Length: 244
Image 1 (cartoon, one colour):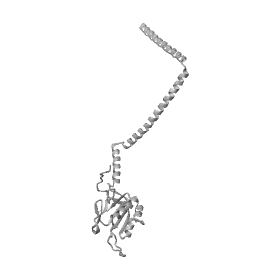
Image 2 (cartoon, helix red, strand yellow; image 1 turned 45 degrees about the horizontal axis):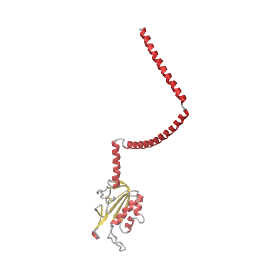
Image 3 (spheres, one colour; image 1 turned 120 degrees about the horizontal axis):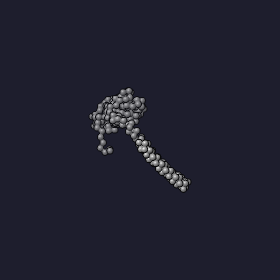
Image 4 (spheres, helix red, strand yellow; image 1 turned 90 degrees about the vertical axis):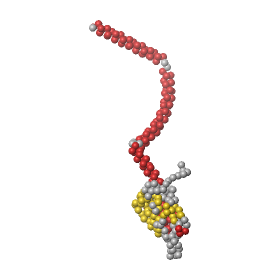
């Protein structure tokens, strides 16, 4: 038993001795190579190479950093808008509602004015002047004044005025009548407009305003301010044939 233990120790000692000898031999060879090498030349070469490599990596890093910022921004945007399918759906529904509102396809309400014009066409005034009937030009000018004053929505006899709306006279003489959105309208003409009350009223009733002019010509004009003007949606079809 003792003989076996001594034999194992001997083998271990020989193995360690060989390993130490090999290590010393490698170290000796390295010292010799370093001594024979021009260290200054190597350092200069490495410095040049390092400068070149550093410049190349710096350019690549800047390009990657810029790309990283772009991607991070996009990811953050998508993450914000798409945290859940429900939020994405709500976002799309909100945008759709805004588009429909801009197109006049939704009922709206807000502060504004209500203008009621009674057509006194044909009435004889004291100075023997005959009041002329209200025409489509009168209504068109009135609508344009309201839009110019900042009206966000307008209706005539509950017919919403949009880009596709038509306002014109059908027929001639005493049998003629006005039409809005292809629907016949009759006096009194009720024009509703949502917007700043003061601006809207001043635009149509100030000196030179169309409602003021119609009143001066003999028509009955009444302008009321309201905090809850309700305007119905445009119920016609919005379609395009040539626009893409």
